[in-house]
Amino acid sequence: MTELLVTPTSLDHIEELIEAGADAFVIGEAQFGLRLAGEFNRDALVQAIDMLHAADKKAYVAVNGLFHNEHLDAVEDYINWLHEVRPDRIIFGDPAVVMYVKEQENPIPLHWNQETLVTNQFQCNYWGERGAARAVLARELSMEEVIEIKENTDVEIEVQVHGMTCMFQSKRQLLGNYFLYMDKAMKIENRQDAKNMLLYDEERNNKYPIYEDYNGTHIMSPNDICVIEEMEELFEAEIDSFKIDGVLHSADYITEVTRQYRKAIDLFLEDPDLYDDEKFDMMEAIEDIQPEHRPLDQGFLYKQTVY
Image (tube, rainbow, N blue to C red; front, top):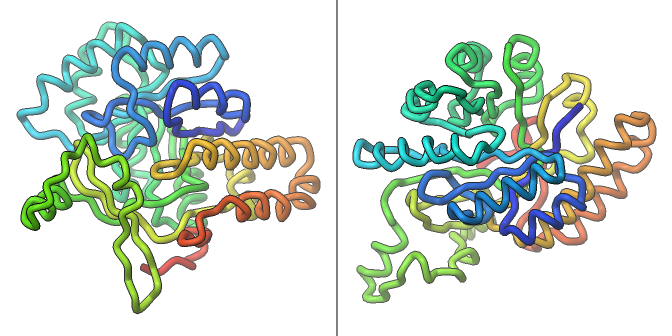
């Protein structure tokens, strides 16, 4: 059964996404997780986990930040606490997380997510032997590469089917440093409107979202991946999880996109011909809510995206 994985913005949004048909949810604190759609502190995490388990849904906590030695005590404490509240999986990129999880009496299964580095089956199986139940594939892979990796791995495979891609990350607070230099100091925690900050490439007429959080500065792709019309090969390859990444999108947008992908999955499982008949209508429903400055494409699955 293919999983539909989403990124909620809040506790209220979780309820909406449950109704929209999501199966699993990525939640966590920005201190430990990269590019989260919403911030869930410890109290909110407990409520979210309870809410999801009551609805027979899965909670995945992101602990995939870039950790320095000074962060390790906090990471260890967080991992210990997560084993008390028991989410279904922990998402990691740093081996330190693996080491701390291995120390637990009943370790929570891991999802390996090293962003652009997850590019072949040997990597996936390597981390599978060390506790990873799933590998989150890089967004820059072709469809042929995705299928080949799935055919040769012993772990679950997750593929992003919708949303923007991170093109650049710096641990430095580049925006904050710039505004300080310009005598326009802006505190990170108060920069709610920064989600609308864009780098404009006049020559290509591209607008790259740029924002800053606890883990540094992130520059995102000018387009959103959308493969709702091209899911047959992913279904046939038996990809385990389809992820909708809602970072920098509104809750309403994420909910509607989730609703359309839920419909696509259900139609295909019922009868592939039904999916084929209605996939263009589902694409049109997404196009109707898509921000004007963010075109839709199929990412790198068919080598159509060039930055």
